[in-house]
Length: 610
Ligand code: ADP
Ligand code: MG
Ligand code: ZN
Image 1 (cartoon, rainbow, N blue to C red):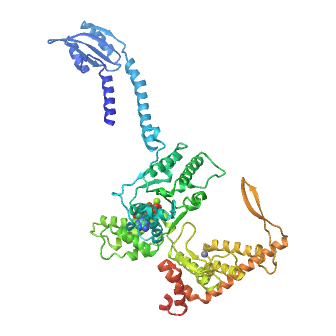
Image 2 (cartoon, rainbow, N blue to C red; image 1 turned 120 degrees about the horizontal axis):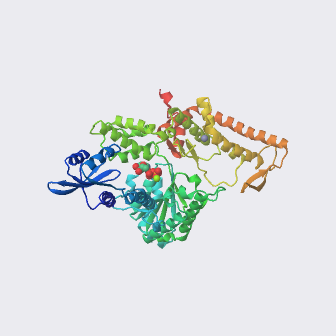
Image 3 (cartoon, rainbow, N blue to C red; image 1 turned 180 degrees about the vertical axis):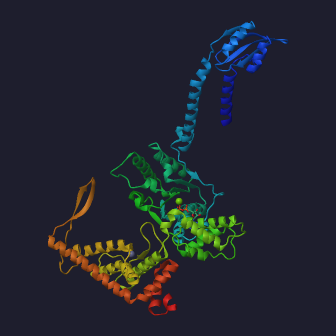
């Protein structure tokens, strides 16, 4: 195409240049003067810029043309021409066509040309060469034989894989499930921080199931024209149903799945809502037995519209956590398969040096290490190359915030063990399920999970007090070990305060106030167009003061209680925190074993071992 345009342009220029059918030979002005002096010039026509004429030479008549030297020559020339008896005349140049072409046709042509190109690029961006194809989804259908990814390429994430195996099995032989009447979930939502392998896992599911895999990113539904997104969703589902059994993967679903109906609905959000509504109605509309399974991924589950998570839609959610030290080693192994490793490489050490890294960053470390080794013309990647690569990846801007300093990690570890140990020391607390110092999402540096042994509908005052003690255990541990308090306990304090207030106000658990329910008039108030549920105070100022005192007493009392209990078990706290720092995650059983071992003196802390 470009060649054709180029040739056309050239043709236009040439035809302007050589529009004149008769072409006199061009001579220089001095040559012309020579001819004139020799008496060979028969006739001339003088125009503003040129002199054209006829020469009378020995070989006969010859047309010639020359450019005039501006301004200076004509006065000298005229007498000479007269002298030589040359027939001369003047002519006003007819530049109409040239001017017309230059001032009108050419610029207009250029504008049309540019406009045409812009339009083509735009229409290519909105998917297709013509505006008629806007509504088609830009879904990508992976070729299974070429880009096949399997679970072998995904390290760790065992729990997630286990859950997805069921879906893979269903896609492989749906008959088995159908005949027994089992309902397979329509949608599965993968939730996790960026780079933890959600997209990779989704592709691995397709690879394992060996079914067509449609992949589209949430942002690809959104275009500049209203209604396009909804049309694309429809198109996507039509394609998928035709290819069932298959997997539809919607990456970054939060771009369309944000909470609907804000106060500040603008044009953009309206388009998004239409797209989301279309997606929801498509999901409701098809029978899961058709064998279309929808996977979606997000790293911002908190912004998702709750309608998305309703049963029959994405009713199954799988958390993809950042890997712990063992997981990181496995991920490094997967990626190290592709590079030549020197014998001195210790992937375990690399894993230990990269707390907080997600899979994407680890893949990056391996690649950077290989690049560094190659630059130094090494045959194999050595440990030092990986060490340098880690520094480089840590240096890579945004990650910095996620990688904690050694001191911060210690604070977090003691804080979490404080919660966990408090849970095991308090008689009525729920058992610890897992402790981790791996940052999880924003604002959470570590976590202690407890699982209740049974569903509770009624809780007694001692149980609630123990719950308070566990909530405050993190802060108490920090104070015992470091003698100072960090900001890390903010969320705990918030929860503890709410709980204590409920105990006093709602459950009547304060002796001084007695069995009175306080402030229980819940009512809906219209606030800024939204209903807000709040409580109206139905007690006096004096009672309010008493409530505050009682809440404070509950909290400080239990704080003292848990601090004493933890201080008495100082070496258990220390020992387990050390193990946690090394392993990063402790399951409940391993934790309880450690408590026993440290308590009985079977295991020694680092300090005790010297
Ligand atoms: P997400 O979609 O969660 O943001 P990706 O799936 O795009 O993350 O992961 C980015 C890259 O990180 C992958 O292509 C892969 O190379 C690497 N990666 C992430 N997690 C893992 C894992 N568990 N095992 C192996 N590689 C991983
Ligand atoms: Mg992704
Ligand atoms: Zn805490």
